[in-house]
Amino acid sequence: MNYFILMIIVFILGYCCIALEHPLKINKSATALLLAVLLWTFYAVFSGNYNHEDLVLHLGETSEIVFFLLGAMTIVEIVDRHEGFRLITDRIKTTNKRKLLWIVGILTFFMSSVLDNMTTAIVMCALLRKLIAEKKDRWFFCGIVILAANAGGAFSPIGDVTTIMLWIKGNVTATKIIIETFIPSLVSLLVPLTAISFMLKGEILTPEKNMEKMQSSINKTQSIVILILGVGSLLFVPIFKTITHLPPYLGILFGLSLLWFVTEIMHKTNKENYQRLNVSNVITKVDVPSVLFFLGILMAVAALQSAGHLKLLSSTLNTIGNIYVIDLIIGIFSSIIDNVPLVAAAIGMYPTASAEMAIANPDLAHFVVDGAFWEFLAYCAGTGGSILIIGSAAGVAIMGMEKIDFIWYLKKISLWALLGYFAGGGVFVLLSKFVLHT
Image 1 (tube, rainbow, N blue to C red):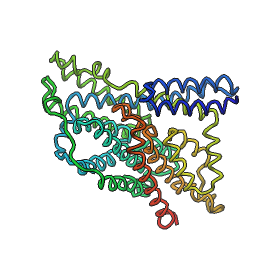
Image 2 (cartoon, helix red, strand yellow):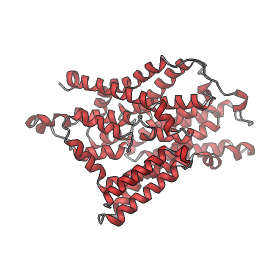
Image 3 (cartoon, rainbow, N blue to C red):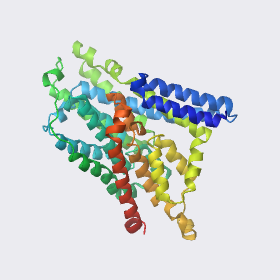
Image 4 (cartoon, rainbow, N blue to C red):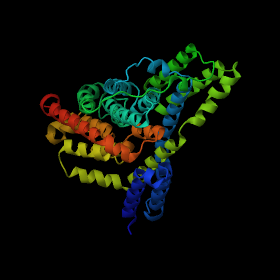
């Protein structure tokens, strides 16, 4: 059998095992890691085109995301252990599901545009653990967090890794991407929130306060200091990247190291607190299997990219002709295959056109800097990842933290995500044709 086809079959089988993790009782991280190894092995042994530098390059790019995720999850765990999130959750008094739906959705949307969708999802998931006791209710609100985080990240140049790619590559500018995709991104959230509001009834069950309290001498001042430092470290990452031009994972590791220093000094005189709250202990509570899942699935997709599967997909899409349809299809595929290599393939497939080229050939007008193709690609790749839980970094992070079942998400959240995706896409097309790019 041709290795090219074999890799596709293996990927589909591995994907099915990940989707059916609970019925099969096989951890998705084990499947993802095995899938990555098998795909790279088939490519290296049978293709004749294997280049070790290519593997190292993909591993480096994937490791940046993995270390960012590990650092962010550890920071969130440190803040949580110091009861920092209770300073926020104690201010949310409502137990009404509808009110909480809107509070969580809007808060997540704007947070993810300032931080990024993955970090925001981790923070909000930790907050929901303090607010909602019942697992299935918490899963549902976590699903809303995924929708809101991806929608908020899509319109911001620092909110989603694919938007960052387009910004750094010069396909879009920061001001234009915010102005021209903000409304579609907001619509992609408001439509499902409005529809769900008509169906959601009742009150949430909050965790018992006495069950949450730690038997320690953590005082409010310490909680405030750690909360400010933790959230400040996350907020500092895009600033760090802008100033130094270094990758975001170094910024998150800087924040983690700063928190580490502060907590060591803070608890050095309290032996009980030091043993329980020092970072060496806290980091053991971080969900490492979900980090390994992320490593495996990204490296598996990287193998498909190196073997030429994604380039073939891009070439097939190129025959469609309509740029809006192409972007919508890429967005849907990004819920199945990681959006990063898809956007990377699209950038390589459709080079940015100059203003002179667009004048000479009007068909290239959509491919100039801040052209409709690039802006719509940012929207579709960002929000399309919400359709399936493993379609985005935010989804993968929450799936690992809350152990949300793939099939449950497919039944309860995917339809709302798809509704919002097409609603926001429709708004973008209308604005593009009649207002923005006339």
